[in-house]
Image 1 (cartoon, rainbow, N blue to C red):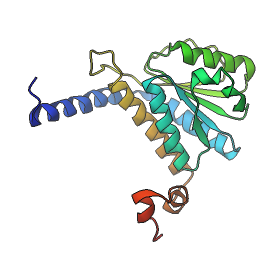
Image 2: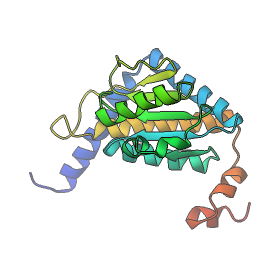
Image 3: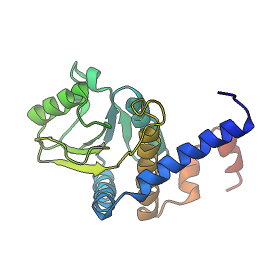
Image 4: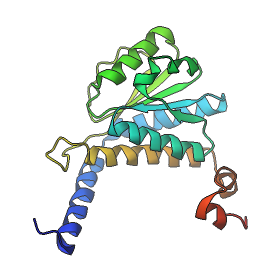
Length: 205
């Protein structure tokens, strides 16, 4: 493959097209699920609960980024590693909190083990599960699902690429909707983000 301007632009365009294909295939069930997640997280924040984002591998990085975005909006949240969680870290989770799990297949053993232990020890804790699989076998009755389809991964159709972008878009959409619902203003964001170029730009507010 000759890596030139046209090849790079073509690959960028292909990725955008694949994401568009996935997002356009989202139906009313998924949008209703997204609304339910927005309502659940918003209600949780009013009760001073904490959102724990979790995932394994690349989806763990997506979960960590989501936690960073939501925190900048003033939402109490943190990333929790599902492996560390079952080695003591889940001790910080309370029944008033919410665990937001991310897995393309919905079958990631480390993540499912964490959620199973959570169900047994803290059955009242809410769970939101974001996945590219429509039918998931999760026995926890407190689990809400968000189905985000992924028609094709850009690398061998197996390495997470398109699915990561899809999940990021869904999570960013939830963050934006919560911001609107809470009527977040720029001055509120300024309080949480005094550093960097953004902080400098907001100084005059």
